[in-house]
Image (cartoon, rainbow, N blue to C red):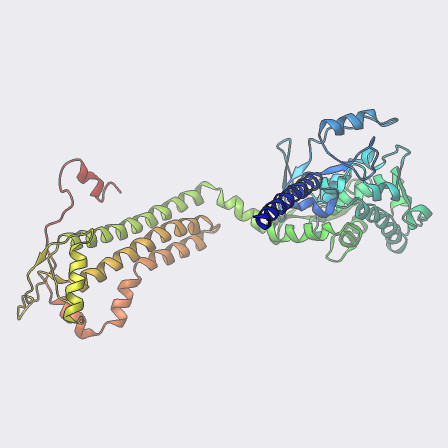
Length: 489
């Protein structure tokens, strides 16, 4: 008895240890539920931040909780932060995001940093330092899906490259501050410089340069009072500068964070190629002799979406959907007719390719099954020299037709759902019409196979057969008959 008692004691001891270990693992998992940085921003976990008044510098406090609000409010010398109600939630491959306020934004994710200077300058000294970017006390990397360190280097890189561009192409000589060149700190005025460059790069395509010019983006830059600092004297200088920024492989792709390249590819994929519409003549407000012909850009897929939402397209789509449903109902009507034939038409128990012993066992299993058919004694078919009249079918023929009914009904249900979604996914008149014709051809495929694969002799024999006539089991009058009328469907 003692060995078995010892095994029981060991089992209980190990069981308590396993429970204790699982509890500790659950506590660790609970502590790591929050996302501490941008590396797990797309995992769906809630964003966390480092605590202010905690003994451990690595303790995480969930953003938005009472503890976070209490520590934020009680931190000495810290200004009251505004609510994080504009945090966006989006899918991994989404171009646009829905804010908590209900509005929609399609700007790059790095644009969220532009109005968060108070959170970037954590100590409030007017300078965003590299140390503050590395610490990321507000965990902005998780909230905006862009690392604050990556954003800090992008700001420094933008200032340096824009100053170099001014010296090379615009004749503007400026000196890069040493703390920016060494990536140590960014004063607020240089961050405001970056705000304008980031907003400019959000257009992603040089085809929008004339639109930016028309909206007045370069109006102040072309003012003679600003020539010395900006170097944009006329419309040509402004257009060349815009093309250097927005062209593929241009300054924007090199200056912005790595997420900007992902955003540019998403814009090209979701919006399509640009189409240009000739516009009016634009004149420089500071020089009436300086002008350019405007080109209004339109995205291809945006135009397709506009056409899709028009009344003419929706009406055409409705007509084709009704035609598709009519063909589906015709197929259903034929399937019901075959089912009615299988139930009511006489059947003879003839299995020409089956041995006698197998035949008797099969007949016994059929007679004990769920289904029962009208069975007539075994007899030969009535053959007329001029025409063939079928007054019964064999059992294998009946079973084969039953299998075909199941297959046809499955295909009908599948094609009805898939075909409807397939038609709804079209955005052009021609594609919609051709795809509707292709769907209708599927139901006619059996007739085409019969026409091209069956020999002419067999076709002539079938033409000599009289139509099969039988008493239908479906109701012919009364209220129940309405459900089997073609007019209803």
